Length: 299
Length: 262
Ligand SMILES: Nc1ncnc2c1ncn2[C@@H]1O[C@H](COP(=O)(O)OP(=O)(O)O)[C@@H](O)[C@H]1O
Ligand SMILES: [Mg+2]
Image (cartoon, rainbow over all chains, first blue to last red; front, top):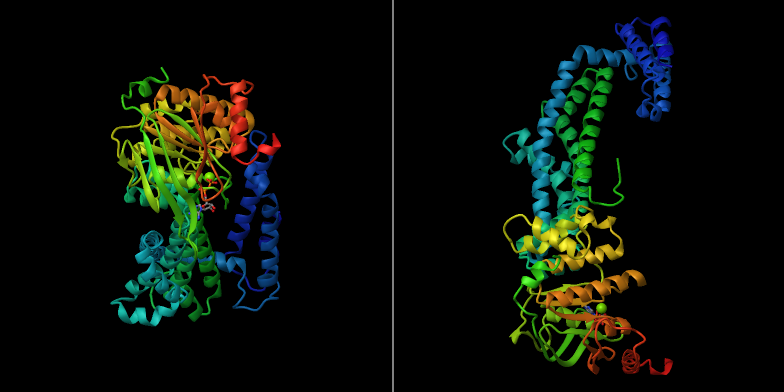
């Protein structure tokens, strides 16, 4: 399949000659040969390869269709639908800027998310544990929480000295809210029997919070962390498109200004890898931390 | 060897004083009377079984003795000292083992030592407690990997490692199959005979009470009050076909209102 796609890329003439057609075809040929070698290798049958066999077959077909519909025939209009070799060209020629943007996005996202997760977790534990904190904080959280963090953009950009700190604040807000809500409900719904047992064995309130309430609430906390991560992506990209002069969101905005749609697709692909990678990372952390849970949902 | 530390403990079992205790739950709109003017005592090292219809207030009584709740009226004391809160000298084992699912069996058993900040690693102590209940092979298992009987053994070890002077058991074998229950009854008897602690066992099983306890106290329907009390003056190990056993079972069933079924 891959070899066929490579030959298609190389030898079927396009409407206009594009510089990276040769590279795309070459890569497809190389993947095809690599798969053939691994598949035919008698010494080691790869489980993963067998699992993914239908995807491996479908992908080159997709590339062929994509090429066919764009540069080979011109069915889809430019500039909105660039050929795959044009997107590839962005990676080969503009990779430095893409990498820099991805890094800038990470540098903006991670502190905001970490602050939001930490504060949301602490607030959630306090609300779930203490009636007094619950009384005062819960109504505020219920009233203000549903506001999307992006709705605070105008106020945040005005209140904070830099767009960067404003964005960090918004990302923290967006990720902190679900973490706080789910942590507090997790802590509040810990079975009384756990507390009874620990109290009976001589535990003080500190122990009850740290060694009973928090571990019992962790599954719920992780649900909050996942929701917070998703919300933080939204805020990150929005903030970068509106105010911050760096990052993948800014790159998208900039590419749109030049009608450089190949760059937009390239940036979207990088973003997809980055964000799904982060979610995968959080899943890995959760699987470790919650390894004690029976029948845990795998990603 | 197994009983080494328990025998070495010089502290005897606690005596229990329950004096004109009444209790009502005030969670709903109207208070629910659960215990009505109950008075009885337990001697140091004695094994007493508490019987009564379901929902009559037996668990509540044990919670009061454990100090997890305070009675609405009357006094609960151990060794003539009023119970004002929980204390690791009086430990309660619930019907559900309620092991902490995020801790291994060993970590569950070490819970009390950890909670009280007992210094050092708890390896030797937990090893001993595991051996006491025959769970050595499952030290590093997680609770969801245990059978019901094993989980209840772990719950027992989690309590025994703290050398309680009063063991409060709330239908601890109620959910187990008959064979596991018999095994665990035998083990409990052995632990009590070796340990010297006082035991109060709540059960709905008349035979279990007569196999294990030196005295049986029967409560009436809610709110609980004592309707019958009997010494079980039979040597261990007890036999279900012993005439004394049969006579006592009959008296207790009559006290529980099941006389006509005999
Ligand atoms: N925390 C509570 N709040 C309100 N009512 C309760 C509570 N715990 C138990 N009860 C009620 O008290 C009564 C006695 O309960 P319990 O002591 O568990 O009975 P038993 O152990 O004899 O079956 C029951 O009617 C039960 O519904
Ligand atoms: Mg009960």
